[in-house]
Length: 627
Image 1 (cartoon, helix red, strand yellow):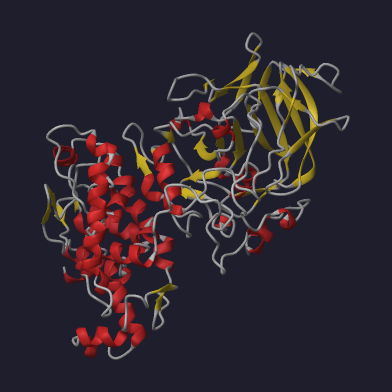
Image 2 (cartoon, rainbow, N blue to C red):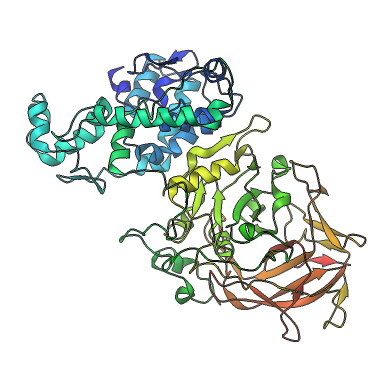
């Protein structure tokens, strides 16, 4: 078991699987009224200590940042139990980089050795626990992870000179003379990978225990003053007053490795790393520029100069009246599935703009542009993103909410201009998982259809990542749709036809998206899988004043079936539906941050009716049916 103990000490080492207890090297400790156990605390135990089973209220009061990963990705019916499922194990391994950012390391060779040893103990007969470990070993990120880059003062690009001096550390730990020797780089490696977790002092000027005491005192004061703690009422337990149970988190905080952003957004965005790539520098972009697409690199802003001030109180999405605060708030771009098992979605009726585009496997996916989101307690479920959705999203300057993605997104999703919150690695096989600890899973559906986030979780993630929540100058463009002064019934428009029923089943054969016009209300009601598409929050069928079908160049990118769409183009056509009528249109988009414009066959920009808009991105060659 010595090899097992060198694994990441919180994730696998505190879990009971198939009757096997993996012990942790963390001993029981008491802080105030709360006892920290060697296994994850049960929901009932948490309720007895904090008066609530709301995991969102535990985070600041009890759980460490690393422990939050377990709770955030565990289905709610798993909370309080010690079993772990295969999906749980995979989920956590896919989020290793977020854990490693907190200063933790894991020996993959050790996990492999333990896996072999366990199988030998079972006389070569694999059981469910062995299958879980073996499956984790096959994770492409895990097997392909490069060794840490270490110099005398930096570890994987992070500067530890403020807390580490090799001469001091070797003198304080002479037992390392034989195994590590007087090698500053290797001593730093040992300090980061082992010493920090044990609370070692790396130099004479920084004492982590003294620093932690000061941080904990501040945490305690904040907890005592918090509304959530006061709301617990009489007899409430004493707050824990702990920033973390991990020395690594204190080191990380002191060094600024993952300090949360300010509660109030600054007037300027965080400076991008000098080594960070802009979207146009990505090696992956050229491979996705399809025939007929334009290089829009000149149209991509390179910097944020502050927040954009929107003076109009008419929504740029719907033309409806909004408050000034709402007009200046960045929308969400939320990736939602069309899978039948995933319906209905929470919060989809808040989408002022709803995109639907095909992906691999013959299934479409949706991206909901939601400007009014700050009161939503459950948004989703959430699925992964694709590169072409990012291009569609950028013209709205949103905060992108997704659960991972694909390798083709590398260089775009992780560029400094994109603000995204992802439940796992942002481009599937790599990247960060910004804000991942704020997602949660429900028990009413099975994975992958049960991942969600709340408005408060998004706000926390934005603070942690330093994202502006108001529109960004240099990125946002207010000149989107042109709306009619009154009602546009398409009278006199060239080539107008009747269209009270719109059938997109040839474009989206899995979801079979359809629209039925309600003349009394002047909107199209959307159906999916042969039934009404509703919002799980209110049970109401979603509807749109405007329906646009946008024919788009596309191609299959690889044998897995991943698709590419030319979202920046000036040569394609489509259809515009409103008020039970339809006309043929053309569309133009000249850059990622440039709004898409739509024109009738006389060359006039179409005037949308006040209300919500659905945009179906059709693979060129597939057409809508309507009557």
